[in-house]
Amino acid sequence: MINLDRSTDRLDALKVQFSRAGRNFRRFAAIAPDVIDTHPEFDNHRFRSLHNRPIRRGELGCALSHKRCLEIFLASDEEHCLVFEDDVCFDDQTFPAIEATLAWLEAHPGQRWHCINLSSPYPKRYRNIADIAGRRLRRSFQFPILMSAILWNREGAAEFLRDLNEQKLHRPVDDQLRYLMSRSGLGLSFDMPPVGLTYVTSVIGPEGAADRGTRNGWYDLKRRLPLYGWALWNTVRS
Image 1 (cartoon, rainbow, N blue to C red):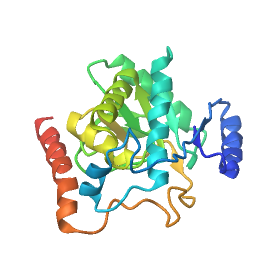
Image 2 (cartoon, rainbow, N blue to C red):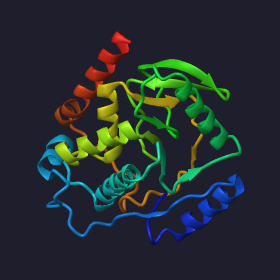
Image 3 (cartoon, rainbow, N blue to C red):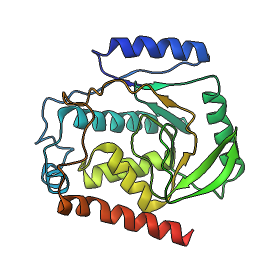
Image 4 (cartoon, rainbow, N blue to C red):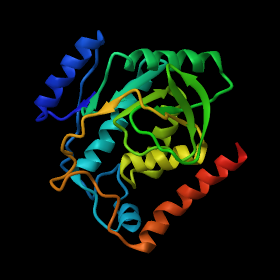
């Protein structure tokens, strides 16, 4: 669970939810970087060339926090990892649905996957692969945005870390994951996500949720054309 030290109200609310669900969680103190443009894990020039704006401190901190969580996961012996941000909410069907999904995937090893977006749907460029707990599990060739609740396997976590290390952070982290999953076709999601969002005010920046970039046709095209290309290619060949 990624949670800023100052967001004690969110942490308290999540403790109640996890207790009600009979589950435990490990808190990860979200990173608030002191260095931004020259951070060694961040490609400032590439980010600006894609988004026509500087990255926000909260965006970089969010990305680094997700990266550290995956490093902790891969240093463990666990086969799967749930990474939550602190704006999630659940009901009594959330964890049974996640467990049923893992059981189905383990019973169908031919359905290769890297991660599952548990909180965000995207109703374009996908293929339904199973009905699980009243929900449709999809192979999302255009992976949903937001990383509030992601279920990882070890192969997927290693691949995303490899991308972050080789390419450096050069997009908002959910956008960088979306691009990678749309390229590989190994990202899954649901038509009805088992994890909800509270839609509290974003703490990424003072203006609220991070925008994808200054509105400009050329910058939009540079960012989106490769994503759409890979998503369409994987949709057609599936």
